[in-house]
Figure 1: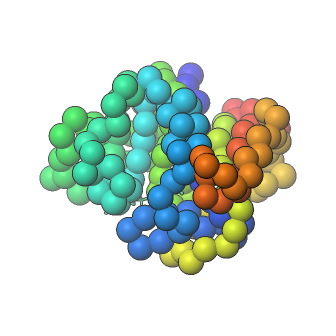
Figure 2: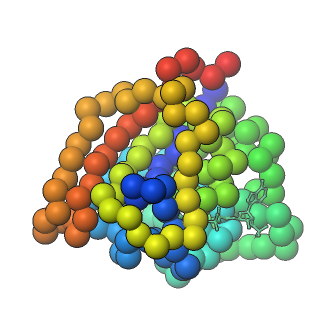
Length: 172
Ligand SMILES: NC(=O)c1ccc[n+]([C@@H]2O[C@H](COP(=O)([O-])OP(=O)(O)OC[C@H]3O[C@@H](n4cnc5c(N)ncnc54)[C@H](OP(=O)(O)O)[C@@H]3O)[C@@H](O)[C@H]2O)c1
């Protein structure tokens, strides 16, 4: 049985997106590097909007096992992308592989109840945002690796806290 793992960055109020990008502007090199380490060789899942906003101009993320886009549009296609059309289809795939959910808001919301782990980058600050991430039940989660704090500096414009969470009680 595979796991569902969320990988996301949010600000102090939960903001994760604004218009066609991230609330705090470009991701920092430090966060890009962590994201890459976490997701290399993995199966990634993203919503159609995130694909078009963030990744569409680059195509599928390289050196990953598979890039899946979720859309309700049965006609939608993207070069090098696997296309799925329902949560049920993803849960079926997750029986045989880990799935790394990389956004955006609707997809995190949909899969949070099924997630076993969350790689969270907390961006220090409050930024204008139109998309956010909220914990459904924060008490159900515990920090499972030592947090890493990066102060503002050459590899990040805003201070960052890298955290890894896992469920206190594994999902059935
Ligand atoms: N901070 C971060 O870590 C991070 C990471 C990624 C993205 N983001 C931000 O998140 C924002 C985008 O998030 P969003 O919530 O607007 O969109 P999204 O979650 O990226 O994509 C939503 C789309 O996914 C498809 N979808 C959702 N649930 C589905 C289901 N159950 N079955 C089939 N298809 C489904 C639908 O596509 P169709 O409309 O085609 O049917 C829906 O419109 C952007 O601002 C982006 O920058 C932030």
